Length: 434
Image: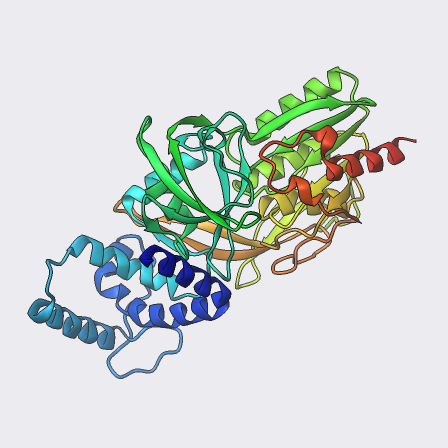
């Protein structure tokens, strides 16, 4: 009975997701005011502090550190006198930093402890000890959903399916948990150990307990094959440090087999390392396109602008191109670097986009180490497609809109031959080939 009540509360929270998120943000703002008390020495060592405001001075651009320090001292005194349990000072300090980043109201900015930062760096290397599933988090409700299950990985073997909503991991409720922290601290673990993941399966309206045995998983960021009609098919699941090279090898292999057209599948690709997407765009596009040239330079791939209107420009320069018809598949989970690649190719009419409107994440985060092993991830700039389109919050609407067949949405492995969106993309490529 108690378990049923807990689950009912979970779904009540889901229905009020936007309100809960807003209220949580208000609570965190109060907690975040104390960040500087603990963080000042680290920040000063890294030359990013602008110095505290003077007592009584109203400064809309800086926190009032005297007031903060006084309030934090008062709270600590109350804790010392009345708190029933032992205080974990390290944990309290971590949560002060977490609170300050959460108080920014930006779901993409975060604080990482030393342990979290080490795990985050391991993510980009393409090999980890985990379960072999790709997760996405709804920015309003905080729900984490399985968007891809890698074939023959532990999650696949346990019966996990795309569309499963994570409810608990080893008894820990996960709604609202930062996705990176959830993956690194709860789902990943020592190879050979078990993790129990409770998911809610919407199509059957049931909770399912899955026991998954962690093992070393090599993330297949690029998969490819030749389809009928000499049309190549390349799937990119995410962008990490090895993805661009894997893509080049796949494209070269398909070209050696006589590829006449290409379907590039970026569905449910959450992004990742921006340089990987830029390098792939560079490999596909010629270097001499002038449609969006500026300052005498050619073939803009993407550019960024920060709060001061400054940023970087990324251009094609490798002397290589793929001069064949291309269709790009996107969906509502295609985000960030996947949208950069899509925007670059479609702006120059070098590809037709097929599927559903993409996620709409057009902002750049940077990881800044704080000198003690910890780090922050902070949003620093917008990025724009070559034509100047700001896709953030809007996404890219495909040239050809095609919904995935309902029966395929929860199928763990869908072959290109039975995938209606892939087949629609193939048709577009064949039209270009005629």
